[in-house]
Amino acid sequence: MLTDIKNILLYNSGGGVGDSLSIIPIIQWLKKECNLSKIYYIQNGIEKHFNNSLKDFDNGFVKTIDFLPESYAFASLKRIKNYSHFLLSKKITESIGINKFDLILDTQTRVNNTLILKSIPHNYFVSPCARFIFSNPKTLIFNSKNICGRIFDYFEKIQNTKLVIPTEIENIPQKYTDESAKLFRKDKKYIGFSITGGNQTRKKEFTMKTIKEVANYYSDKGYIPTFLIEKKYNNKISYIKENIKNAFFPEHLVEPKVKNPFLVMAIAKSLDSAISIDNGIMHMLGLAGTKTAVFFANNSTKFRPMNSNKLKIYSYLKGKNKKIEELTSNDVINFLGDFI
Image 1 (tube, one colour):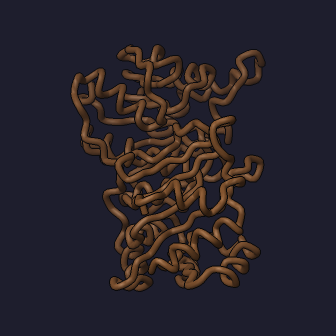
Image 2: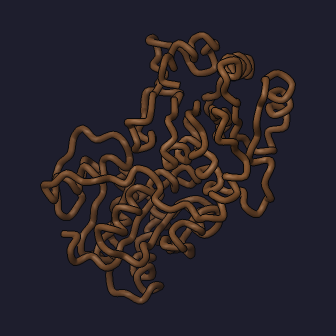
């Protein structure tokens, strides 16, 4: 199937930077497997990450199709006006000068989205929607849950082979690794903390009291608590500086022009380990190959990073354990055990 693939369209229904980061393993694998010079990309949301914060990824390998509606493919087929999404299908191929895509790879599971995407001219179509029943070649996969993992499961089954999955980012531009190298001492141990969530409608953060006690516990053990936190979180930063010993904010020491996810991934490579909630930085830590304890606010870990051998996952489950905001420092430290 993949031997005759020359152009690929990849669809991501998520709009956050974490959504784009989470599919980098798929992008890296497709590039090598199909010997591609570029991959075309549709991403929902107003901010097109591979055009801005991730534009340095692999020398611009990802080409975002950005003339589409912000919520392209999110359409109710009960409303006549939403059929305009189907009318854009031919325009997508025309915009890049081809008759059809060799492969369209849809990473989400909504039927309406899948039907619209499948109307784009193509040879092969792969979607986990309805357990891959809309795919060509067609197969059924029942157990996959992780967004990236289920795509790899499909190709393993179709090709009847075990794949080598590139779970970590293969190339961080040197300007970011050089900048990071200036910030860390080789004779020190660093433990990362990613404690803020972008989605304010869902509670998934530790209390600052718990963060203080956990960070000071590891500080007393010789680690430097290293916070991956944007400057806009003024109150949290002030609290950390006042209450946590040896707190370190590496991103705050560099010029604004180099502040982006690649810098965070370069920083993450200098950490001995990290603690994170479910957020965009979690994906940066995963791509960097950092040993990370991740705390999820629910029992769904479909967005977890692919490098499972370097993860320890806490998932809240009603009636079984505590919500993240209820966890005490002892709860967190006991869960981590000898992982850190």
